[in-house]
Picture (tube, rainbow, N blue to C red):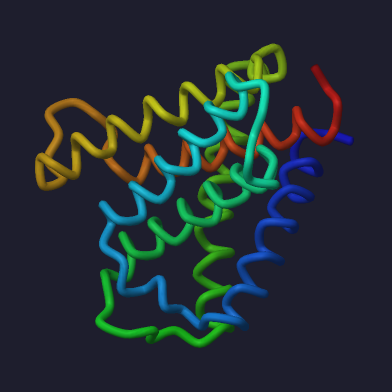
Length: 180
């Protein structure tokens, strides 16, 4: 199975969870401001790092569930960036899924371009390194948010979320396709 097929398989799992949660909760996440979404992603990435460093855990959720959460929250953040924050759950399930798919295509296109240029070097990386890169991207995003979105030479918030999605997909490929 090639990277694009693996990417699609991981995203299908993430999208299915997103759709099912939308059936349960609607699009209540539409009221979240970007810093709130960034903090949710930060919590999940920090928990992954804790799972990687500690011998025991007390909550029965593994790294997979947390990486899936990171992907879905990052996609929600990208949707918020594009549509703006709402005062209510204003998207239908169909609209939410359509917006989700649009953001996935951006991440996938970026992944394909970077894989071409970098020669899929991520396959030689450890999941723990991908986790650290996600945490670093989150700290950068938080700083940009604190600067009201202004950067001097950096790519910006959207690029950070797209990278986080792809790093999380790579981690899930490592964890589920045994390709190290």
